[in-house]
Image (cartoon, rainbow, N blue to C red):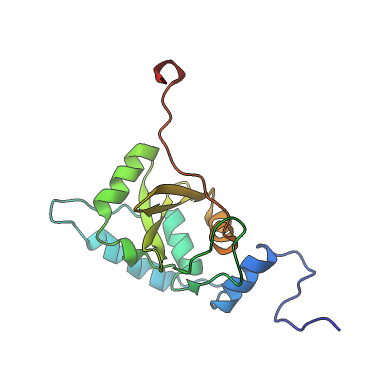
Length: 175
């Protein structure tokens, strides 16, 4: 007899089974949308100015990710594929005081970047750019988690090894 679950594992879902299970375990469900909380975070980020004048940029990709996944504390249900998955929390206020850091990353990527949340055990900052790509910034470097929030959640939950961000030199300048 198959194990009973709150959803049908045989039907097509938006996320891989392990990711779907981790999200549902954290309180997510299809159609979840808390725009009031997302707008509150957007207002808080826009209102914050660092002591030397750095400000956050807020854009639709960030607000949409916060509305759907904001407030969730997500943990992987098992060991990682390549690295140990770490629990994470979707709450952009983890990056409130990092406007300059995110601005610097945005300039390097030629886009705007906004905080998304944090990997709670490592204190790595999760960030989303204006195109919806997700990144992780920690003491060892900056990492690319996925082309959109769905891919990033899968990378984090499954413990897939993300590629490190690097600035590529033109071919004629490489040594």
